[in-house]
Amino acid sequence: MKIQLLDESVASQIAAGEVVERPLSVVKELVENSLDSEATEIEIELENGGLKLIKVIDNGVGIPRDQLELALTRYATSKLTSVDDLSSIQTLGFRGEALASIRSVSDLILVSREDSDRTGNYITYKNGDIFDRGIQGANRGTSVSVSDLFANFPARLSFLKSARAEGRRCSQLVARYAVAYPKVSFRFFQDGNLVFHSAGDGNQRDIIGSVWGDEIAQELLPLEEMNIGNVRIEGFVSPPGITRGRKDLQVFFANDRLVEVGFLSFAVADFYRNINPKGRYPVVFLFVNCEPNKMDVNVHPAKIEIKFKNEGEIFSALSRSLNNTLKDVVIEIQKLGVLSGMEEPFHGTQFELEKPSQELNSNQVGKIIDGKITTANSGPINDLHPLAQINTTYIVAQGRDGIFIIDQHAAHERIIFENIIMSQENGLPTVQGLLDPIPINLDSSQKENLSMIGPSMYKYGFQWDKLEKGNIILRGIPISLKESETVSVFKEILDLDTVSDTSSAEGDQKSRSSLETRDREIAASVACHSSIRAGQALLFSEMEAMLSQFQDAGYPKLCPHGRPTTLFLSHGKLDAQFGR
Ligand code: ADP
Ligand code: MG
Image (cartoon, rainbow, N blue to C red; front, top):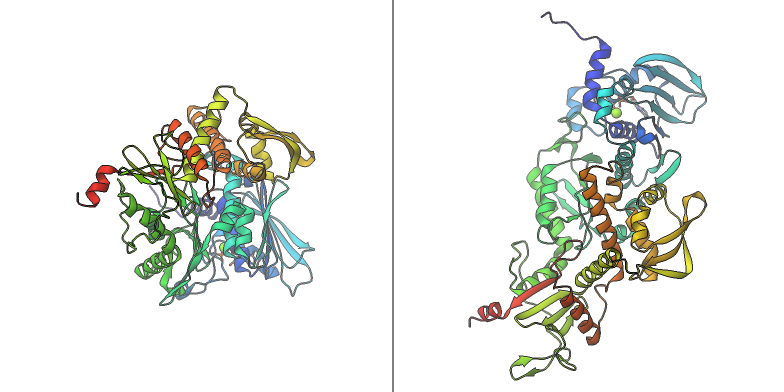
């Protein structure tokens, strides 16, 4: 067959396939261009998950009036002139491919104005070709509108998820950039609603809170800053207990570029393996900075994978920083491991094991009569007798065959969880009415989720009336729930990942099981907020009541989130530890 050069439009559509895969890719390229243009304000608007419209407006330096067409030409860039520049690249873009690729698979309008210009200039493309150009009033900066993405490419469209899911990916992406660029103010709109915005005042926690909730924002620990050689590492990480069911909130930036780097994920997974229960993952925001020439950014079409030249240095900087940040909590966990002679010992070796420093308080411990421990008060009613509470978090109890250390929150949570499920299944009352109804303001995604999972929430005891603008007033709450926790639980449920994941594909087998998962997560959220907290001092009678319920529930080993409820040290193990 004869070899011939592809014409420009075919070539750019093929190239576009690599750069523009879905609405998220367009949003990423446009936002990166705005960041490269030194914008301090960036606004992103999506319609129908980005399929109808993606518009990004910035207040950056703008594009010279005679270069609009050039900006949309393949391999035209202002960011790189020679191949040597590639090794010290400071900008997010450098290939000059994005705008050209995007216009070949959509209809595009570019408007831009440099500071020195009196008016703005625009150029429009339809079906990949120039359609119109001229002068128009505009603020300093650039706006790019991308309409009907992939409208003429049904094969591409068929790869996409629902508009909702695509929109969610975009909002999650922009939110990550907002955290990494806290000095830039971002506003993200979806179908006319402001989904989130960042102030641009440098406060990263505020941004994390407004997107992923205050609990995460408040609990995340600042990673101990680590400088090794020319590598600097900083960020935020989960303490134990702040976990997610997926690795979806592990965010890595390298020199201000959002990246996926296998060994960084591995370092995190390896470190948390001994801290989190199976199937639970930490939240991580990690920012690595190094000299540009230590990082090859030109290894992936969408520039998301990169290669560090000094992987070892960065790996050890991250491990050390994680160690220093979480040392104390991990030693606490390991103490319990030593104390219990656990069936599955912690195999982590990063920390020296310490002797338990906290002796049991002899006033709290039951008396020893005839060589047997009895409880401090009236006598046995259960198989389990409380001996003491340690660290206002764990109940130490004597059982027939050994000693139990019970996480008071995890165990209680599981008990309540079972009760909630059972009451609901057996048609027992699930709701307590509120004397003072509570109005709740919801954001747009919460409103949307409520319209979908309302029936499930109702089933577990939430009752509400609608107010205007989709906000609601709560009139009833689950029977076990404390009133003070109501608003946070209500919102937490509407923010659950499983809620949005089950929305798009109802009906088939897979979605039935995800609906069940979703219902269980709703019950787990209610249980979590209804139960005794870690840090809460308990009376002996309260511990006894709790243990009796725990026994009735059949000593469940895991809490609804999958954390262990109990460590058990059998008499046999105890004897063995003392060489008897
Ligand atoms: P690259 O970012 O790799 O250079 P693009 O196709 O994304 O390639 O953009 C081409 C050029 O258009 C950029 O190099 C830049 O000069 C200009 N440009 C694109 N977007 C903007 C923007 N938002 N503000 C200023 N200039 C821009
Ligand atoms: Mg670019």
